[in-house]
Image (spheres, rainbow, N blue to C red):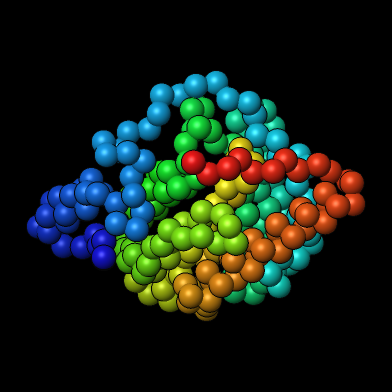
Length: 223
Protein backbone atom coordinates (compact mmCIF):
# COMPACT_ATOMS: atom_id res chain seq x y z
CA UNK A 1 0.00 0.00 0.00
CA UNK A 2 1.41 3.39 -0.96
CA UNK A 3 0.07 6.67 0.36
CA UNK A 4 1.32 9.70 -1.57
CA UNK A 5 0.68 13.40 -1.57
CA UNK A 6 1.27 14.37 -5.21
CA UNK A 7 2.66 17.86 -5.77
CA UNK A 8 0.35 18.43 -8.72
CA UNK A 9 -2.66 20.46 -7.51
CA UNK A 10 -5.37 18.81 -9.70
CA UNK A 11 -4.57 15.45 -8.14
CA UNK A 12 -4.76 16.68 -4.53
CA UNK A 13 -8.49 16.12 -4.08
CA UNK A 14 -8.28 12.62 -5.56
CA UNK A 15 -5.30 11.79 -3.36
CA UNK A 16 -7.14 12.96 -0.24
CA UNK A 17 -10.21 10.91 -1.13
CA UNK A 18 -8.13 7.78 -1.66
CA UNK A 19 -6.28 8.32 1.61
CA UNK A 20 -9.45 8.79 3.62
CA UNK A 21 -10.99 5.73 2.04
CA UNK A 22 -7.94 3.66 2.96
CA UNK A 23 -7.92 4.94 6.53
CA UNK A 24 -11.60 4.24 7.05
CA UNK A 25 -11.45 0.75 5.62
CA UNK A 26 -11.16 -2.41 7.74
CA UNK A 27 -7.88 -3.32 9.36
CA UNK A 28 -5.83 -6.10 7.72
CA UNK A 29 -7.13 -9.59 8.43
CA UNK A 30 -4.13 -10.35 10.62
CA UNK A 31 -4.93 -7.36 12.83
CA UNK A 32 -8.61 -7.67 13.81
CA UNK A 33 -10.62 -4.76 15.11
CA UNK A 34 -11.55 -4.68 18.78
CA UNK A 35 -15.05 -5.69 17.85
CA UNK A 36 -17.24 -5.80 14.75
CA UNK A 37 -18.21 -2.13 15.05
CA UNK A 38 -14.65 -1.05 15.75
CA UNK A 39 -15.65 0.78 18.94
CA UNK A 40 -13.68 0.92 22.16
CA UNK A 41 -15.16 0.11 25.57
CA UNK A 42 -16.52 2.98 27.59
CA UNK A 43 -13.75 4.61 29.67
CA UNK A 44 -13.70 3.62 33.31
CA UNK A 45 -11.46 4.39 36.25
CA UNK A 46 -8.39 2.20 36.34
CA UNK A 47 -5.52 1.89 38.78
CA UNK A 48 -2.33 3.65 37.58
CA UNK A 49 0.20 1.36 35.94
CA UNK A 50 3.09 0.42 38.21
CA UNK A 51 6.11 1.52 36.18
CA UNK A 52 8.62 2.61 38.83
CA UNK A 53 10.04 -0.87 39.34
CA UNK A 54 11.40 -1.14 35.80
CA UNK A 55 15.13 -0.83 35.22
CA UNK A 56 16.77 -0.06 31.88
CA UNK A 57 20.39 -0.98 31.06
CA UNK A 58 22.94 1.49 29.75
CA UNK A 59 22.94 -0.43 26.44
CA UNK A 60 20.15 -2.29 24.70
CA UNK A 61 20.49 -4.50 21.60
CA UNK A 62 23.94 -3.05 20.99
CA UNK A 63 22.75 0.58 21.11
CA UNK A 64 23.99 3.10 23.65
CA UNK A 65 21.59 4.81 26.03
CA UNK A 66 20.63 8.28 24.77
CA UNK A 67 18.49 9.61 27.61
CA UNK A 68 15.24 8.95 29.44
CA UNK A 69 12.09 10.95 30.05
CA UNK A 70 8.97 10.27 32.09
CA UNK A 71 5.73 11.78 33.30
CA UNK A 72 4.43 10.85 36.75
CA UNK A 73 0.80 10.53 37.77
CA UNK A 74 -2.18 8.37 36.94
CA UNK A 75 -1.67 8.75 33.19
CA UNK A 76 2.11 8.66 33.47
CA UNK A 77 4.61 6.97 31.21
CA UNK A 78 8.32 6.19 30.99
CA UNK A 79 10.52 6.29 27.91
CA UNK A 80 14.15 5.32 27.26
CA UNK A 81 16.08 6.19 24.11
CA UNK A 82 19.01 4.36 22.52
CA UNK A 83 21.05 5.13 19.41
CA UNK A 84 24.15 4.54 17.36
CA UNK A 85 25.47 6.38 14.29
CA UNK A 86 22.55 5.38 12.07
CA UNK A 87 19.78 3.88 14.21
CA UNK A 88 17.37 5.21 16.86
CA UNK A 89 15.31 3.12 19.27
CA UNK A 90 12.68 4.24 21.77
CA UNK A 91 11.20 2.00 24.46
CA UNK A 92 8.03 3.41 26.02
CA UNK A 93 5.84 2.06 28.83
CA UNK A 94 2.38 3.42 29.68
CA UNK A 95 -0.84 2.16 31.23
CA UNK A 96 -3.87 0.67 29.53
CA UNK A 97 -6.87 2.96 29.00
CA UNK A 98 -9.67 2.62 31.52
CA UNK A 99 -11.96 -0.27 30.66
CA UNK A 100 -9.35 -2.20 28.67
CA UNK A 101 -8.13 -4.33 31.57
CA UNK A 102 -10.88 -6.90 31.06
CA UNK A 103 -10.17 -7.37 27.34
CA UNK A 104 -8.13 -10.24 25.97
CA UNK A 105 -4.48 -9.62 25.17
CA UNK A 106 -5.26 -9.99 21.45
CA UNK A 107 -7.94 -7.30 21.54
CA UNK A 108 -5.77 -4.98 23.63
CA UNK A 109 -2.77 -5.19 21.33
CA UNK A 110 -4.62 -5.19 18.01
CA UNK A 111 -6.90 -2.34 19.11
CA UNK A 112 -4.04 -0.07 20.16
CA UNK A 113 -1.94 -1.01 17.13
CA UNK A 114 -4.74 0.32 14.92
CA UNK A 115 -4.61 3.65 16.73
CA UNK A 116 -0.82 3.93 16.39
CA UNK A 117 -0.99 3.00 12.71
CA UNK A 118 -3.51 5.77 12.08
CA UNK A 119 -1.30 8.28 13.88
CA UNK A 120 1.61 7.41 11.58
CA UNK A 121 -0.51 7.83 8.47
CA UNK A 122 -1.80 11.18 9.72
CA UNK A 123 1.68 12.40 10.61
CA UNK A 124 3.01 11.72 7.12
CA UNK A 125 -0.06 13.01 5.33
CA UNK A 126 0.06 16.28 7.26
CA UNK A 127 3.62 16.92 6.08
CA UNK A 128 4.20 18.67 2.79
CA UNK A 129 6.61 16.35 1.05
CA UNK A 130 6.50 12.90 2.63
CA UNK A 131 4.96 9.64 1.49
CA UNK A 132 4.57 6.35 3.35
CA UNK A 133 4.56 2.75 2.21
CA UNK A 134 3.39 -0.05 4.49
CA UNK A 135 6.03 -2.78 4.23
CA UNK A 136 4.42 -5.32 6.55
CA UNK A 137 2.13 -5.87 9.53
CA UNK A 138 1.75 -8.90 11.79
CA UNK A 139 -0.06 -10.05 14.90
CA UNK A 140 1.79 -12.98 16.48
CA UNK A 141 2.97 -14.67 19.65
CA UNK A 142 6.41 -13.59 20.82
CA UNK A 143 7.71 -15.64 23.73
CA UNK A 144 4.21 -16.10 25.11
CA UNK A 145 3.07 -12.50 24.64
CA UNK A 146 0.61 -11.27 22.00
CA UNK A 147 2.59 -8.82 19.87
CA UNK A 148 1.89 -6.61 16.87
CA UNK A 149 4.54 -5.33 14.49
CA UNK A 150 4.43 -2.76 11.74
CA UNK A 151 7.05 -1.68 9.20
CA UNK A 152 6.99 1.44 7.05
CA UNK A 153 9.13 3.17 4.46
CA UNK A 154 9.04 6.98 4.65
CA UNK A 155 10.10 8.83 1.49
CA UNK A 156 11.06 12.48 1.12
CA UNK A 157 12.51 14.03 -2.07
CA UNK A 158 16.26 14.45 -1.96
CA UNK A 159 16.79 12.13 1.02
CA UNK A 160 17.44 8.44 1.51
CA UNK A 161 14.28 6.55 2.54
CA UNK A 162 13.70 6.30 6.28
CA UNK A 163 12.86 2.81 7.53
CA UNK A 164 10.59 2.75 10.59
CA UNK A 165 9.25 -0.14 12.66
CA UNK A 166 6.92 -0.57 15.62
CA UNK A 167 6.76 -3.49 18.04
CA UNK A 168 3.83 -3.41 20.47
CA UNK A 169 3.06 -5.79 23.32
CA UNK A 170 1.95 -5.65 26.96
CA UNK A 171 3.27 -6.03 30.48
CA UNK A 172 1.17 -6.31 33.65
CA UNK A 173 -1.41 -3.55 33.16
CA UNK A 174 0.54 -1.54 30.59
CA UNK A 175 1.81 -1.36 27.03
CA UNK A 176 5.42 -1.89 25.97
CA UNK A 177 6.18 -0.07 22.72
CA UNK A 178 9.45 -0.19 20.78
CA UNK A 179 9.95 2.19 17.86
CA UNK A 180 13.04 2.00 15.66
CA UNK A 181 14.17 4.13 12.73
CA UNK A 182 17.17 4.11 10.41
CA UNK A 183 18.25 5.18 6.94
CA UNK A 184 20.88 2.41 6.84
CA UNK A 185 19.13 -0.67 8.27
CA UNK A 186 16.05 -1.99 6.50
CA UNK A 187 12.82 -2.85 8.30
CA UNK A 188 13.72 -6.54 8.61
CA UNK A 189 16.91 -5.63 10.46
CA UNK A 190 15.07 -3.08 12.62
CA UNK A 191 12.42 -5.58 13.68
CA UNK A 192 15.13 -8.09 14.52
CA UNK A 193 16.86 -5.43 16.61
CA UNK A 194 13.59 -4.52 18.36
CA UNK A 195 12.86 -8.16 19.24
CA UNK A 196 16.36 -8.49 20.68
CA UNK A 197 15.87 -5.27 22.65
CA UNK A 198 12.55 -6.51 24.03
CA UNK A 199 14.09 -9.83 25.07
CA UNK A 200 16.96 -8.04 26.82
CA UNK A 201 14.51 -5.66 28.49
CA UNK A 202 12.39 -8.52 29.86
CA UNK A 203 15.49 -10.43 30.98
CA UNK A 204 16.69 -7.35 32.83
CA UNK A 205 13.44 -7.11 34.76
CA UNK A 206 13.64 -10.79 35.72
CA UNK A 207 17.13 -10.19 37.10
CA UNK A 208 15.83 -7.25 39.15
CA UNK A 209 13.05 -9.44 40.56
CA UNK A 210 15.43 -12.28 41.37
CA UNK A 211 17.77 -9.92 43.18
CA UNK A 212 14.93 -8.58 45.32
CA UNK A 213 15.56 -5.01 44.15
CA UNK A 214 12.05 -4.73 42.80
CA UNK A 215 8.88 -6.75 42.58
CA UNK A 216 7.16 -7.22 39.24
CA UNK A 217 3.63 -8.56 39.09
CA UNK A 218 2.79 -11.48 36.85
CA UNK A 219 0.98 -10.41 33.66
CA UNK A 220 -2.78 -11.03 33.57
CA UNK A 221 -3.94 -14.17 31.79
CA UNK A 222 -5.21 -13.64 28.24
CA UNK A 223 -8.93 -14.09 27.74
